[in-house]
Image 1 (cartoon, rainbow, N blue to C red):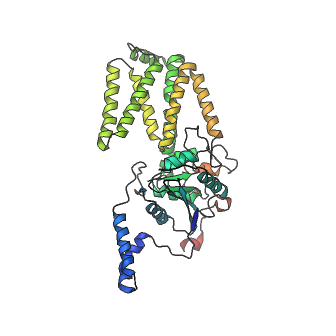
Image 2 (image 1 turned 30 degrees about the vertical axis):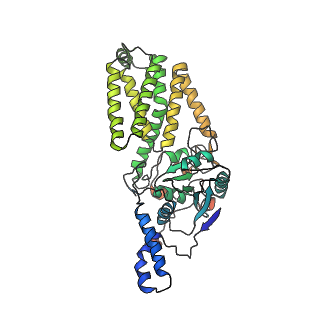
Image 3 (image 1 turned 30 degrees about the horizontal axis):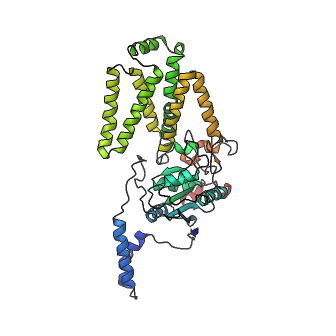
Length: 423
């Protein structure tokens, strides 16, 4: 392991700074070997031109930067350093894989990141004795504390600005060579519902959108199960007009509600997978047209009821509205468990599923940080982290870093008064 820390009194030039001063070096300095150095810079310039900074496609935003990580670790580090010009930004270099010798860099802010969390990260990086680490997804699975949990315990991001925000909060990030994403850790449920431009927009708009995302997550995990339970066991809870509409819509459908929902959910999963694997615009066309054709054809053939199509469509929209893809995939798996529980035990089964889900999330940790922070332990933090959770308070009130930062560096903003504010 090689640890590198940029001191405050050192001036570190990025590649673009060197290229900007290239003509000055040629015109002013006349030293042996200077032309050879310029040839080396030209070679690297050609290599960098072939690796332009792409746009973020997986984490789109309305405001803020559009840049995304590349597959070159040096470029990715430069993108972080461009946003955090602080000597406390520390890089720890690691080599993973006996055969691949994959270069990895652990980034954090010295004095801001909590030491115990960093020690757990280093321990996880030392443990895997494997011949190859090809991507951040492999490393994430190797570092998982609970391998049987479907929920991600690292937060993958392709955006440099979001990674820089996480570092400033006191978290750490891991960059791998040949991997166009960063692994941000520790991860919490709260961070899975935040987007890169949440801090660039008005707090009222952001609070409303976060409520929509949490509602979408609930629909993605529980709506099909609730529909099956209500249709099979608890029709007395529904309004009379709705019961008559459901009975009329299901007239002629040969399958029970449970099998009906499962068939439609599996059909949408096939459409989703086909659209993902097909290239470019063809995949988008398959996703839209395939969903319309299959839904309309299934209703016309009396294979499923229109209400089932509506429920499955709302569930799909809910899963798409969750910002983190891996968290959304976990909710999709839980959805099928709730469908079977609702078909077997009704509302009682859904309640049991929700209870065991809450119990699992309460016991889950990410590098020593409770996964439900700040909801699970507001008394430790005086409920301060709740200001940036389900709702987001105004920016001026977010004066402290989250709980996983070092306690002496929790304050990140102070209000200036009088003449000091104008200096």
